[in-house]
Image 1 (spheres, rainbow, N blue to C red):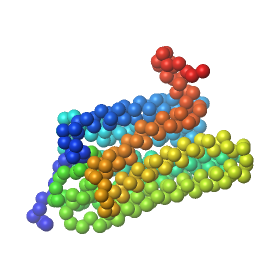
Image 2 (cartoon, rainbow, N blue to C red; image 1 turned 90 degrees about the vertical axis):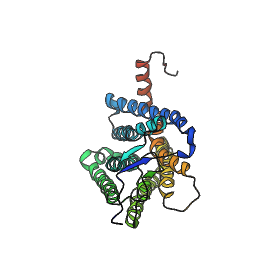
Image 3 (cartoon, rainbow, N blue to C red; image 1 turned 120 degrees about the horizontal axis):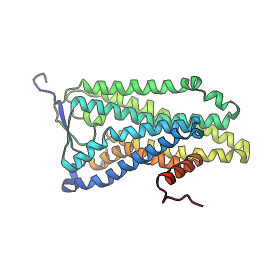
Image 4 (cartoon, helix red, strand yellow; image 1 turned 45 degrees about the horizontal axis):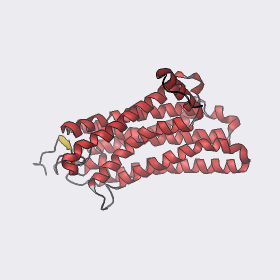
Length: 314
């Protein structure tokens, strides 16, 4: 093994099975990329520019919009160029940097949903103390542990991946540097990498899901006890439940497909991994904009000012 050189340059060859049809993928992914950038930029602009939207919940939505604005920028442009011109190369350092950014942003998506669930819990279950709980010094106690967890776990498995020797090949069947897609190319034992990857899945996705589920169970219980007065407040929670369910389902399928023996075709596995990152970035701001009355009204007002032809509904 000492005489085998480790690859320092890799080829991202996702969807290569499509052959000559691969460039056609540029169209749907480019549309999703534009939708993601436009929707998140608009949501972020509206929340920042409107003082009435500077509530804790809207600020959390703006924070998620920042993450979902930056996330596609880290891999979609390269992916689109690869579809059109076949530019598929990436260095090991570039791969590790991209991997760290993508996975940290991905974990941040679920973390923001946890914070939103916490916000709804305080607003519905302890309304008299809501502003006290959501005051920044106190809320930081809930924010910092999740951020530290994400940074440590992502940095750990990316660092471990960087220490591997890659002599099994340098072609990744993926469109970006996914952790297990790179680890599969390593020679020697990768047991620790797999273990840390599974630990990250459990500590982030599973723990966050349990936390959100527990929060909404207490919210539902509180609403049922309060009667009709809590039904309107519960309406905003439906959005978060739909988002977290879709996001975590796609994420778990994407991550576990590399670790569990299955007959999932390679293009489907790559597509699922890509959608885990791109789907929430496209549709979360649209869903929040439609479901949140105040944000929807300001978005329509902003669009009316920018494009006079856009008329607000009667």
